[in-house]
Figure 1 (cartoon, rainbow, N blue to C red):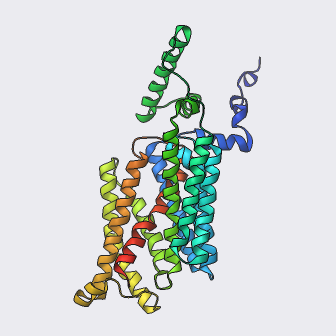
Figure 2: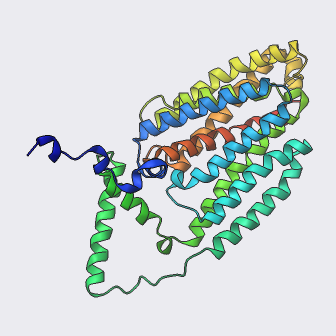
Figure 3: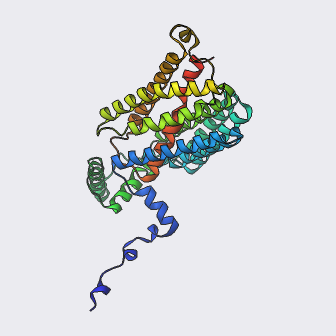
Length: 353
């Protein structure tokens, strides 16, 4: 017999569910990346977001082009939140999150005021709670398991625990086992409704951060901070790649944020004053030490604040302990990019005119 005929082709070895466009989607949502690879991929995506932000900001009619970009990032976060957290949300909840992510930035952009985003967030909370409650599965009693079912359940739980420990340790695991584990981890009958609701509200909080980006763009004298924030978040996320532990990478993010923030603050102030876009930063302090040192201090505070935000988000999402699929890395990048605007907006409202 011909030896070539006995060797199965790559297509024959590929499950039907992994072929074609649907197969690509399954592979992106089921396959897992190493922790280091996932973090680097999310850093690359944040860099792309930053480049797109600067390009869109430089275009005319920024308010009409910038809001759809931020809305798109929020919608992507809504659809990739399950892969990021390892906890799938009900389809209706995902739709509610995506709808709020699309409407909130447009509402703030059209009105130019952050307060008009509050009703959108309130309606989103009601829609999310309703979608989670009405799609919650009927509680199942797992207290009494007898006979063969007991032995099968115990063996299954032991296998799941062994696979989880292998994934955390970074060991090689068969893709079929990974897919089975992901399905088991998200079985609706074994997932508390309160956990699903908490996860959905957490996603909504990150999506609500998109309003901070739009509000910055709506303030005439502070539009120059949009590219500043975009460059700063990209540098800090890449600084978060320094080292191999959570502590070393946190120190790297804070160090890069401190240095780059001070430099970017001075550059932004000089460029802004030349174009009459930026008011006096920290006016009380600037009258004592001068406007440029005040701008450097303001940039330093921004870098530290954004760095701390990224470090906390890393810890909450378990970036250094859990492997995620490529779609999870995409969701992580969206979350970091959106949330970075909150400390910058807060410092501007405190320190600017």
